[in-house]
Length: 319
Image (cartoon, rainbow, N blue to C red; front, side, top):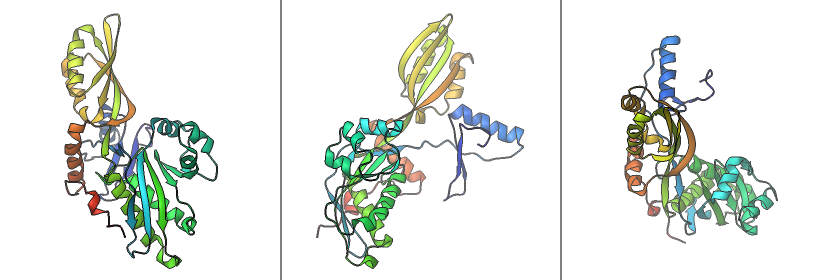
């Protein structure tokens, strides 16, 4: 990975395995070959894993998170982030990190947020936002960083399948805090916020979003029928076709999860006469009919119960 800037590598903290990610299946095959042949290192590899994103499709009701000592309560709403705000984050118009004072308020209002909502933004994290909408809470400043820490932990590992969360706006609407600081420390605040946030997300019609890529395939015209059939069999969508001389280029949008084994299949379909490249283009909602099965597969692979939790698992009765 040090020699190839298009690759990312890290150690899995739970299994100790070396995780390597790159631009695609063929790319990883080349890297594996180089490690074995050029470096002389005998390595074991596993089947590729697709990393999804979790998100939500509607606003949740206001739900409560209660601390283990029952002395602190947090009332939370989540809602989907608009395309305009999300694009501004990805483009860098809205930088990730803590938001101080009136910073970004004008930009946020220009993207469709009302004055009070824009004023409440306090943190932008991995395509998500935390907003403090409370009024007159005496000790809110003392627990601010703990609330944000809990927010980050849920965005890093979502409740549905343990995948990163994206495009979620978390609003802290109100909170009741114990007057004594010793009763509102990290062991009390963080679990309470996580509990309320989990319940809110589960009540907001959570979904999985799958990684997509743009596929460019160039081959002699005679093979175009085979190429389009192969792409469509993998849930691909043909975007464009162009011809230059005897060669035709097909541009398609395909889910990353459907592209394993494409290398050998395209070689067979074109007698080895096709050239292809891929480009990552972000995430799109996984089709509804596939959501439940994919969630179960991910949870089973991670050693979790196949069925995701319910709102009632995290929501205490009010009072």
